[in-house]
Image 1: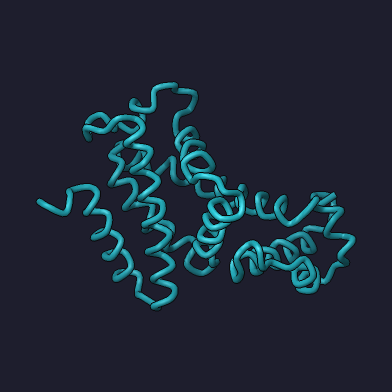
Image 2: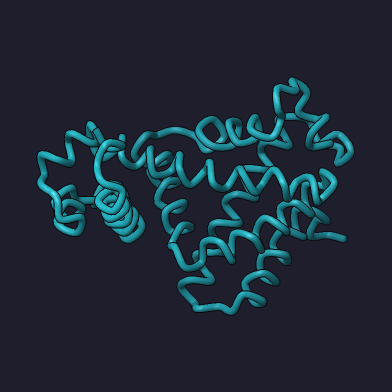
Length: 201
């Protein structure tokens, strides 16, 4: 039903939903607020999505697909140097999402996974994300070269989880403290260097 409605109406609905999920944690999001902003009936909401959880997962799947499309290109440009890729990804994300509140959406998604679903980022986001880069290649190391960093597969996945949290936290800090792009990037690079090079050099 959702994909059969008028494109403008669909866009208005999604903007209302993103606004609500960006401004509030999942357990405070209101169907009434979404339908009021989208100018639709409560009944219409439930013909589009079974519940708020289904809507939230749809929004996040859409954002993640958009992100993967350019992340693959950035990985190639970084010549599969994972830390260079992460630096380039942060810069790209800053430009792509700073005006859309997407990192607030990611923050709330992380909270939703950990606090509402009692799940782990590793199993919900990280492993699926890594598989997106593999193109049916069963060897994760062939893509990310983590053995060159003296990491096991599990250690590498742990590192990716930590980096995801640092990225989201840095972007939220830049929003809250109104940091310039250069200051935010330098802050992220500094934090990332602790992982890449170690605090004790």
